[in-house]
Amino acid sequence: MLSAHGFRISLALGVATLSAVVGLLVGGDLQLTLVLLVGAIAAVLIVAIGGDPAPAPRDDAAAADRDPAFAEVIEAIAEPVLVTAATRVIAANAAARALLGEHILGEDVRLAIRHPAAAERLLDPGEDHSAPIHLVGLGTREQRWEMRVRTLETGERVVHLVDRTGSYTADRMRVDFVANASHELRTPLASLLGYVETLADGAGEEPEIRARFLKIMHDEARRMDRLISDLISLSRIEAEKYRAPAESVQLADLIGQVCVELSGSPRAADLVTEIEAVPPVRGDRTQLSQLLHNLIGNAMKYGRAGTPVTVSLRSEGDTMVRFAVADQGEGIPAEHIPRLTERFYRVDSGRSRSLGGTGLGLAIVKHVVERHRGRFDIASTVGVGTTVSVRLPIEPSVIKS
Ligand code: ADP
Image (cartoon, rainbow, N blue to C red; front, top):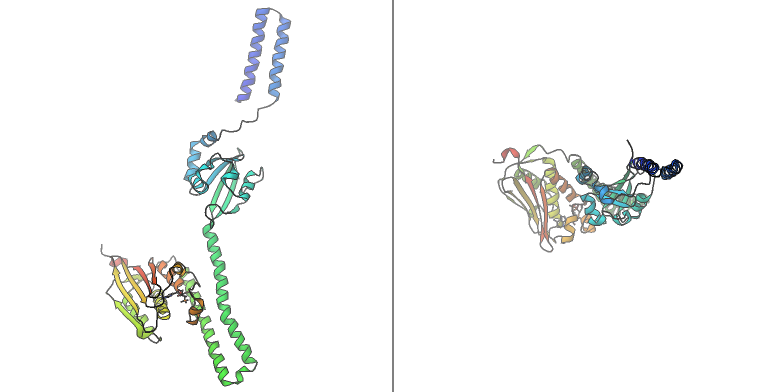
């Protein structure tokens, strides 16, 4: 098949031949006609030798519209996708326009993606662009993007932005968690080592000092033990995150049992229960018992001595059961509440530690509630007290249809 350029050359040769024939018929001078014909053919060949002309730069709109299915395909992709030709953006899906602005179509890539590393990559000719590059600062400040570029046969480039904020945050949380856990374990360990050395240096000969040191060492060892138990619980609960709990649990019985277990604690006399008859929940008895221990334990720790710690249980609608633990303590300033379920987050670290806290209690509660497909809420007024409530779905077999 002839290209457009080839077709034009053939046409020019045809016209030259035809004009020579006409010249011969009209003028009757064969020699002059031959000279004209050779000249015309030579002119056509000179143009032809120049080869196919460089393709004219694409009209942007035409490039984007060239195949409606193409535009539809990139529009269907949830993540931002752009197509660039030379230095310009010739197509962008809705996600890309939402991230970078509606104005990016037809814009220079340096203005469309205002990021030096991205611009450098997109303007770099040739080179294989398979390795992704990481971008910070597109969209919100916390967002992390991975930019993948693929060059098509036409020379156009498909730019795919993948949101990596979630995995970046998870990575950072894991690193922070390991650092925090090591620090929390090292503090009592350093104290233990210090007392062991002091005792070894002869301080233990004085019975009173020895007894005091041993008491501190015992407390520090217990603290490490609590911390390790909570860390193990947390990792177990997380490991079971996607396995739905299978037991039928009567919360009234469980609350009664936990209250008995806490009867030896110094604030046992302040415990008040307000229990209504509720249907059973589908749950994990051990985890729900731990949840109750943590919530009632916190109310006892942070509530004022001599004021009631109230544990209540009632139905909520036809499908949920709500239990709550309320104390009359100092309360929690509102700005801390959203962060309380982070591991090792405490409003007052010194106070938490002196009361034997690990900083993991509410993180455990949150994970248990999530595994039970429940809801968790902290309401607190500074100077008045705190109420922590948990809603759990009732056992499906007893839901009235
Ligand atoms: P901790 O072992 O320190 O008690 P938690 O994860 O159970 O750790 O709780 C995190 C923090 O939330 C506590 O350090 C404390 O500052 C605050 N907190 C939890 N429950 C209460 C409460 N009932 N009243 C006041 N503050 C509370």
